[in-house]
Length: 216
Image (cartoon, rainbow, N blue to C red; front, top):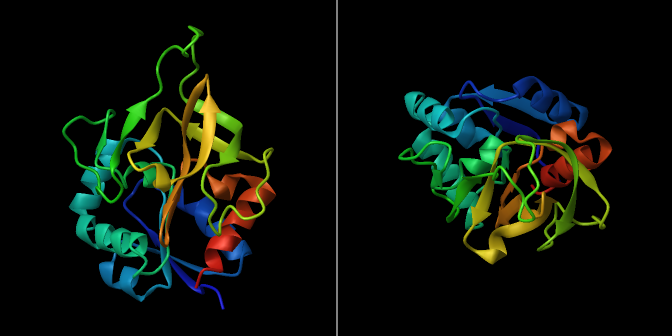
């Protein structure tokens, strides 16, 4: 069956051109919108994003999107709602807090917090932050988007902060940088979120997006 119409949530901080181009290549109508009614009508939703956690949370609030996006993500997470995909900053916003913006609340859909990469690795080496470029992931808990992944697939990352989920069952893919293991993907029910950019991760990233679009 598959999804036909995807609401790409516009709060002024997404890499919308590359997101829409990738969805278009997969035969899906991407509707860039800040309208909660359009979010309800679409077959699925994506919360993309680049930039800072605090700025993004405030932008969502200014556009009246906090509750509509939270509702869509929560219903996806409990399995009652339509599929929801968070990407990069869109993953981080699903958590309640971030070290990047103390005192600013995220959506609070997934328990846990967002932390900054340390200046040094556990063995004392200086880490380059942001973590940028291609890195390998490992499957922690299989789901429809990770089917077929082996131990050598690489995806494209660019981020200075990473999500630390409280529930081990929310961790779907893990990645290591500088000796630190962090969440590359979180998943629960029909909610999926990646720290990497599938739309920039060439064939394997498009394959993962295609698996998401088959969920309908």
